[in-house]
Image (cartoon, rainbow, N blue to C red; front, side, top):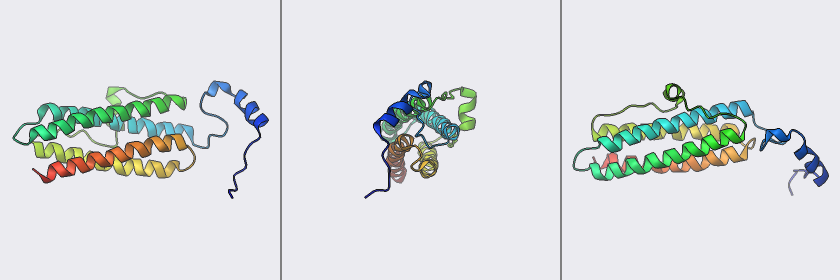
Length: 176
């Protein structure tokens, strides 16, 4: 049996009416909201930097093996944009503002924007960026723990896809 105590209905109802302007953030929220919003914004920047890098690689891929890589670049760019949307939506739910100032995206991003000149360099840079995202998102998940299950779940879903992206890039790199 669990040691968790369930709150009675009348208390839940009363608490829901208190600070109603906070939207989804109730009194039961245990996370450091400002820090989690900061982590979400840094991850948002990371995703947008990755979108831009993958898009560039999609347009610049040349060579015999470029078709397979270009298709992956485009698919990954679209998925990274979906990640960015989820992160931005969560920032707003927590009462924050998504930081989308282009001048700050590269500065706030975990991953770097390294263009790469050859197909091999492009794939390598994308793999490096995915590995950075994997480690940083894993650490964020550990930091959040049970304090904010919704944000943790978003990061877990994104992490799983970043691991797939890294695997895709490693496979392509192996074939170059």
